Every structure is written in structure tokens, then in C-alpha cells.
Amino acid sequence: MQYMESAFFVQVQHDINAALDTSDRLTDIVQASSLLAIYLYMNNRVMEGYRHTFSAIKLAVGLGLHQIQTPNALPGMYPTQVPLIPSAPPRDSREFDDRISAFWQIFMIDRCWSVANGLPLALPDKDTLQCRILTPWPTSFGPDTWNTLGFQQPLQSFFQGLELTSPSDESLHTLKAKAAALYELTSRSKNVSDPNDWNYCFAENAVERFSSIIPSVAFDCDYFVIQTMVYTSFVHLQRHASFDGRAMKAGHSIVQLICQLRDADWQYLDPIVSACWLSAAEMYTFAIANTKQEVYSGDLGGGVGGYQNNLDVLVQALNTLGAYSPLAGDLALKLELARS
Image 1 (cartoon, helix red, strand yellow):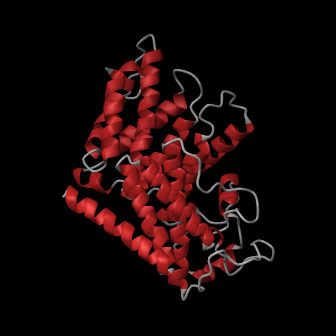
Image 2: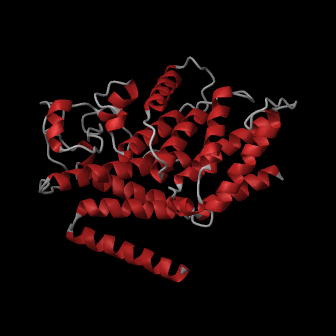
Image 3: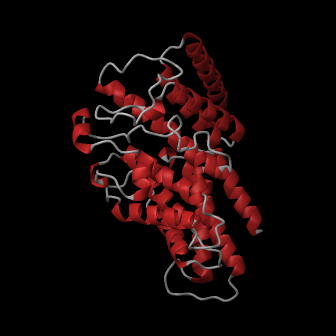
């Protein structure tokens, strides 16, 4: 099986390079490179994954996928010059949606895995007309709806709570992209000691707003990842103390989500959850080491006993996921060594 995996990996790289040489189906190459990056990250081949992420981002920006224009765009909202890599207009609404989805796919990979590995973003959302992300969120409604929605800069409107759409009308793909954006945004506030810092408050308000309006849906692996990233965003906002009630509650919510998983679910989980679980586990490890006295509050998440129980669940979850993602197994080993 491992031989076949290596052979497929080599073949995919060959096919991507061949398609690049002929400029064939470039949007498909962005998506293929995105999947290849995830494969490398989940196998703990971080720099190779980052290289493919960077290449996919560079191609996506060259094609203008970060600034796909909606039918109702206002004059001056988009750069006037054509993308560096010319391409034919989308043939129909399906191809239009595919290009939007391709961009947000690589956006999520860049945001999530750059944070997980402490690497700089390949595509920062700079406030310049050339670099600004203007592509609309992937939607579940048809192109005719754009005229009623109006134009909005996606990230800016989302972070500031100025969106015109309701989360209940959005696809899981959109909600996942937004959760990834918050995951990255809050990670910048990890080491902020002043809770009144503007960036900290901005990130805090954004994640609290989003967490309060996420629609409840039947259990789904994508929904599981969305909720996990939102809770991890609260863990990122943990204040410098051995006990931060909100962060601890978020960590316990992550554990509760894990307990809902069925045996058949594990192989379909997005491997980025392993990085989320590590963040929660490190929080509990820190709390256990710095809590001098047992203060058991009667619930599973309270006191040293509760912290230890949650930590055990997280380590076991990483070990279980390690059967499908070597990265998860490596992270579990890291935590076990730290506890020994």
C-alpha cells in the first residue's frame, strides 16, 4: 500500500508539471496542488506542503482567483488590469462557482496550516488594491442572487459583522472558510498580555459573534471541523493565567465533540483537527503544571482531575487519528513524552 501511495504521489507531481507546461486546466491545478499540500502536511512533511501551498497560491493569484468579479461589482472595486496569467471567462455558472471554490480551498489550507506550523501566510490580505481578497464566499444560491446581495469585501465584512447574508443560508464550505479565517486571526493574539489591546478585542469580537450565529446542523465531518476551529480560536485567546474559564470551556467543548465521533468518522476528518487538538492539549498541560491545588467543580472539565481527563481524551484522539494521518500520531507522541 505504501508503495502505491508513493507511486501515486510521483504521478500526481508529474501530471501537475505536464499541465503547467501546456497551461492546461489551470484552475484544476490549483485544486490538485491544494490536495497535494494537505497530503504532505498530514504526513508531517511540512516544508514540502508549504512549498506546494505557496505554488498554488501564486498560481491562483496569477489567474486572479483572489479577485473574482461578481456581476454587481461597483466601478473601482477591482483592479483594472487583467490578471498576469490570462484565462478565458467561465463558460457557465458552474465553472464560475468552481473558480470561487478553488480559491477558498487554497485560502483555507494557507490559513490553517501556516498557523499550525508557525509559518508566514502565503497570501496575506494586504490592504492594497492588487493584493486585497475580493472573491465572494462560496455560496449555495444561484448567480441571480448577487444583484440582491450587493458587493462586500468578504473578510472585512465578516470580521466586522457587516455581512448581508445569514449563516443559515450559507454552505458548509463557506462556514469552514470563515472558521479558518478566525483560526488564523485569533492566532495572532496568542501572546497578547493586554486584553484591551485593539487587535485582541477585534479578534475576540469576531469569534464571539460567529460562534453565536453558527446554525445547528446534523453531525457532519465538515461541521465537526468548523466547530473545532471555532473552539480552538477561543483557546488562542486564552489570557496568560493557569486558568482561563472561557478557554477551558472551549477545550472541554472540543473534547465533547471528539466523544461524538463514531468509528466510521475518523478516516474522513480533516487532518487540521490534529493541530487544534494539540492547542487544547497544551493548554491543559500548562494548567495541570500550574494548578497547585485540586479544585474539582463536579463537572468533567473542572479541576486538575478534569484537566487530566480531557488531556487523556485528546491524546487518545490523536493516537486514533494517527492511523490515517501520521502527523496526528507524531503529535500524540510529543504530548506523551512531555507528560513522562
